[in-house]
Amino acid sequence: MRPIDVRDPEIAQRLWQMQRAAYRIEADLIGFEAIPPLHESLEQLIAAPLTWLGAVEDGELVGAIAYVVESGTCDINRLFVDPRFVRRGWGRRLTESVLEHPVVTVSTGTANTPARELYRSLGFVDVATREIAPGTTVTIAERRAAPQGAADASGRPSARSSLRGRAGPRW
Image (tube, rainbow, N blue to C red):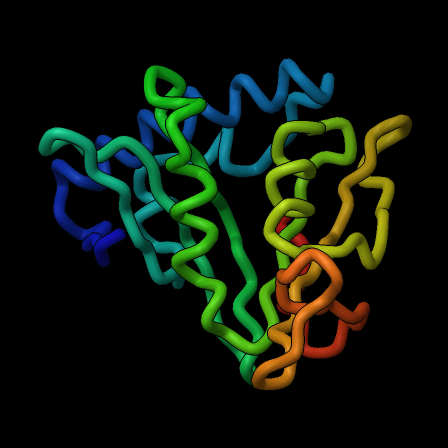
């Protein structure tokens, strides 16, 4: 994973196209059209105060993660992979790239089973569910780094639930 500069017009255009394609799939999956990144303009994507990391395969940007860090908590604002490159581990590797933070939070559509399974497999635990529209909820998950040397029974760092320091869901 490498830092990417969303102010570069070519990179911004590629991110915007990937984001729209990926969130279109999520919207169809969860039955909810109002996912903010799906309707974000190119200018809004560029202006968002986020740190971006990108995944590159054979010289092509194939996925990205954007996040903010506040008070030691990394909040994943968005994670997407070009639909042509899914099921190759890019979402996992992008998420793993921010796990050095003491606390990492993320929210996703509750009905987005693939995303929720990915986060669970990386040690995230569900800490809240919020209704964003009638019949549509998002689940907020959190992963806390284990104290040095500690791990749960699976060998993954243990996780505890807390919303303290959370920047808030993007939905």
